[in-house]
Amino acid sequence: FIHKAAKSDKSVLILGETGTGKDLTAKKVHELSDRRNKPFVVINCTDIPEELFEAELFGYVRGSFTGAVKDKLGLLEVAKDGTIFFDEIGDLPLFLQAKILRIIEKRELRRIGETTIRKIYARFIFATNKNLQEEMKAGGFRKDLYYRINVIKFYMPPLKERKEDIPLLVDHILRKEIKRGEPKRVIYREAMKKLVAYDFPGNIRELENIVERACILSEGNTITAKDIKLDYDKICYKKTTKITPEQLRKILENCRWNKTRAANRMGKSRRQFYRLLEKHKMSDCIKRNYRL
Image (cartoon, rainbow, N blue to C red; front, side, top):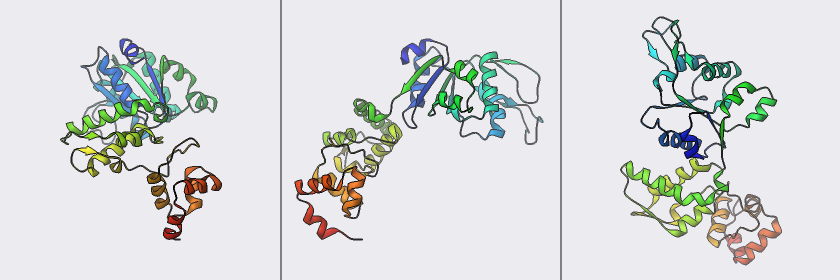
């Protein structure tokens, strides 16, 4: 998909949960395109205050409003004939959606405070974590804008649905750490197994955080299973999941050795949990360690 999208100049819409790597996909489309040596401008629709959005987008001339002490290029002009990535387009209010629609249709802009019309030659990529069809039904997203941006659509599945990508992503993260001046590190098989067993509700962003933290905690240039610190509150334990004694102990420690809390955290009934305790011979261990 990415290679096909890169060859086209049509608008791209990337859908997916927060942290699934929509921004990385947008950047990859740009890097594989004929515009790779041109600017890649990111416009995060949630970061720019509504009252400043037009000024940031279109730019302005000196004296056009209070505080405009000199001319400023807008992000649309900064992009030139590169790529403009509108991140979280689904969060824009309707009146600003109308502005984006006009930009796409007319491919022109006018700086605030002047009458000169300037052409836009950049390519557009959009991303959102929202269901835009549901937003349209609720009146929160314009249908005409949706059909303009939804020319080439790509869905980024959550990390738990593409666990085969985890080793490649870990390698990519470790390479980035090297570029930041960190030593080259090797991740042990057991550490990788621990990562693959986790469901990553925070997706790639959470994986990156965990691996970076492991680099800090690791001794020497190897990352072991003990260096991988997961949030056990968020682990998705399925009935088929095999729990090791080490994992069970960690969960119990986090629950202050409270059996009910631990069972709930693992998504198991009390009977299932008691069987697990007996299997790993940990019932007596709970009696010794339990505290309110």
